[in-house]
Length: 68
Image 1 (cartoon, rainbow, N blue to C red):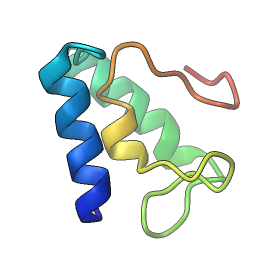
Image 2 (tube, rainbow, N blue to C red):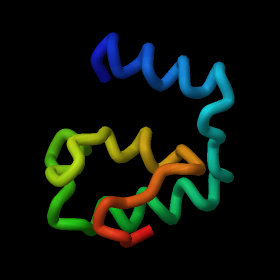
Image 3 (tube, one colour):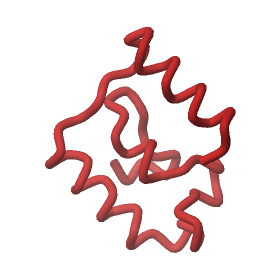
């Protein structure tokens, strides 16, 4: 993850803008993403460009394809 990405993620977590999901929910979301043909080899979504391992941990985020 780039420096800017880490700063954004950390600022979101520190401000309470977004909360983390439970480990079980994260595992379920990430499993869905791993089966998706839109997930790149680098773990990014080809639709939104997000790092999906990170995005699947955030409570108030959703899949742009409505898979979770």
